[in-house]
Every structure is written in C-alpha cells, then in structure tokens.
Length: 163
Image (cartoon, rainbow, N blue to C red; front, side, top):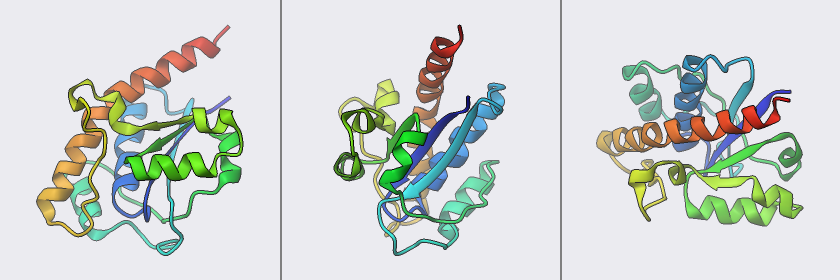
C-alpha cells in the first residue's frame, strides 16, 4: 500500500508545491518512489487551477527540481487516504485540525520544520509571496533542511508496516 504525504500552505502556489517537489526528489533518491506518493494543496480556494508562483518555479528549477504544478484546495474528505498531512506554518496546522473529522485525522498532521532539529522553536516556514527572490530561496533552504528528517520518519513508518 502506498504511503501518502500531502503538504499544505495557504494558496498552494509557493511553499507547499516547493515542499512537494523537494520531498518527492528525496523520496526518489532514496529508492522509495514506488512506495511513497507526494502531493500538495492549499487551505484556500482562490488559487485553485493556477500554476505555481513564477518565483517558486524559478527557484525550484535553478536548484535542479521539477516544478510542474496545479494548485488545489485541501478537502477534509482526503484525510482517510493520507498518512501524513504536513503544514507549512501554525496557521495551516490550526486550519487542518479544524477540518479534521476525527482525532485520527488530526493526529496525522505535523509541521514540516518539526523534522528539522536545527529549527528549534521556529517551526513556521514564512510565506515568501509578498517578498523578494531571497525570501523564496530561504523558503527552499528551510524545506530542504526538514526533508531529510521527514524522509527518515516516513522510512520508519514504512518499516513498521512491513511484516
């Protein structure tokens, strides 16, 4: 059975697609591409159907990542099919907890930077949308720094599933 991870930010055009593409690369490089599905969504509907923000695309591509993306809104009905729902900041985490229909749904939500030991108490990935290129690059750095720890956690979950 495929292990499913969904990254969630506000409009699904900056942070969550960046996290999706970075983590997918980690998964593929670890040889887990056939076992782990990676996707993303936003808490809001206003960007649904749009591509990723051009600055997100630029930063991803310049760092060797893919960038094909279509924004969509997260739906509470998706929880049962997902193993992990990764919020990019505390506001997203609160919204996901609000959408959760069961305690099990809420228990599957985490903050991305909680997988980065160097993050300390600064667990939000700031929204780069209104910023400049440097803000997008910093966002990528934070996403990359947390992806290794997230991959290790997913690998442990997969090992626990193996009889």
